Length: 243
Ligand SMILES: *[C@@H]1O[C@H](CO)[C@@H](O)[C@H](O)[C@H]1NC(C)=O
Ligand SMILES: *[C@@H]1O[C@H](CO)[C@@H](O)[C@H](O)[C@H]1NC(C)=O
Ligand SMILES: *[C@@H]1O[C@H](CO)[C@@H](O)[C@H](O)[C@H]1NC(C)=O
Image 1: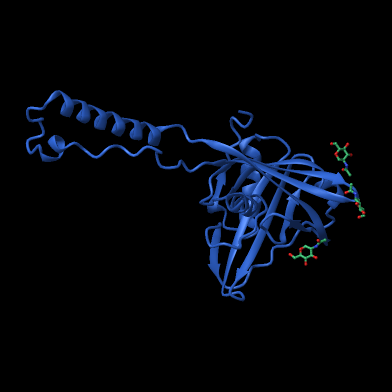
Image 2: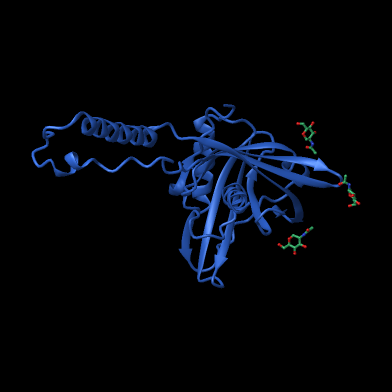
């Protein structure tokens, strides 16, 4: 349960752009800057259907295939956030046996004369070591995670607030730019210690998993012109999301 909560929380940090924790994004001294949300913004057109994350500010959390889907439900709009989260491999269950005495005491690299039994011990030790190395070199394992919340407030012109039941408090972000049908650029900022520090997070969303690099370049240029620190943007991984 604890792990589940942490997972939900971490995913929400990345997907929903909360910056409550120091691990996130771009931290700076002082209060949050105030970037304007899109004027004449349509909540109905934006909070409809699926958005995929195609670029974001760097985070230490390793996620891929990040998506959020807005689903009308009984008078509210649910937001279903999904991602594949890189799994941290547990240490090998079986500890390698300690090196046999012959191996520990061998001063010259070569093995001294060994009994059949000792040879077996040495071989087992080397095998166990090799298995451990293979585990470390394995392809990273990604595990699906999903967090559901709902749009709890719409603050004009373009701020959305979300409530979650699992391990997270209210989150909010602002839509800086969108054409509703192709792309959206969203931004959030959280102050810590009464505005002594703040953390900003930017994410570029798309209606499709992949986009033309020229579109990303165009959006990044707009963000730079607006004064955001776009050097922190990294392209999001949306490859092999269905496996
Ligand atoms: C929501 O998306 C659907 C499917 O793309 C579309 O038909 C509908 O017009 C959209 N609604 C709004 C309010 O944009
Ligand atoms: C729908 O919302 C109403 C009022 O908010 C509530 O009483 C009802 O239980 C909800 N139904 C479902 C299926 O969630
Ligand atoms: C959303 O969460 C906040 C606290 O995080 C709470 O004050 C508010 O009442 C919640 N809104 C709804 C609609 O549940």
